[in-house]
Image (cartoon, rainbow, N blue to C red; front, side, top):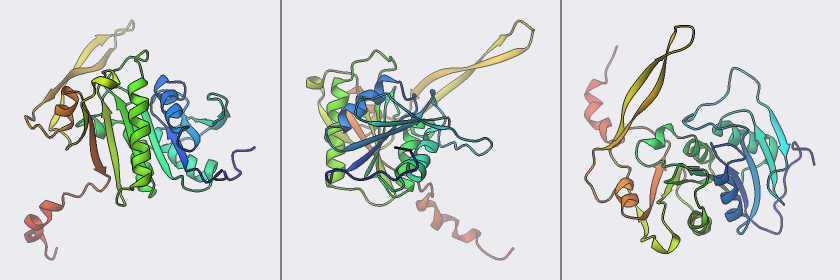
Length: 266
């Protein structure tokens, strides 16, 4: 079936769009597909190569490629040349020709807690779903290895996706879910958290190429400046699944009243 023909909702199952930022062949997306197949009709649209750290970038200066590929048995899969946000846009406009019931992104290989949510391609794909008015979750496992076991993450993703479909979030809201790397039986539970005040203390490692030109590798350490026990970083350190409700409205609403005296004629 050509990808420009509309998908149909089969057997009254929810249509679930699965995407990620690690690329369509990453183990994390395979785990997420496995989880979502137990819930609904799954369609995959994901980058054809890793797109970690892309944030909410979209492709505007070059054409996008979209190709149907055979990756997961019984699931229609498409790889795109663009960013995670591009993938969601393409899925809605050119693959499904409708909004899915749920967008899930991940399972990311590595944490997207705290400030990582700003840089994360995984979360930006989920945010794009929320912008489209779709229920959305970004899932991340706190382990960067592509050989990391995904059994616990599959169970968590299945449970939370079912819960969200049954009890949708308010418009413009989505979930950032991070899963500690422990066995399922050792998870202490789920914690609704706020984003921790933490950031990278960054350094640029300066090197010289064979032609004598300098180049730089971004390095650094993740430093938590937040001692609260209600944060995502605390939850993960104590073996809880952290769930942070996120919104794409970046307005600092609390600051509007303080700035009102700036108003007036030019």
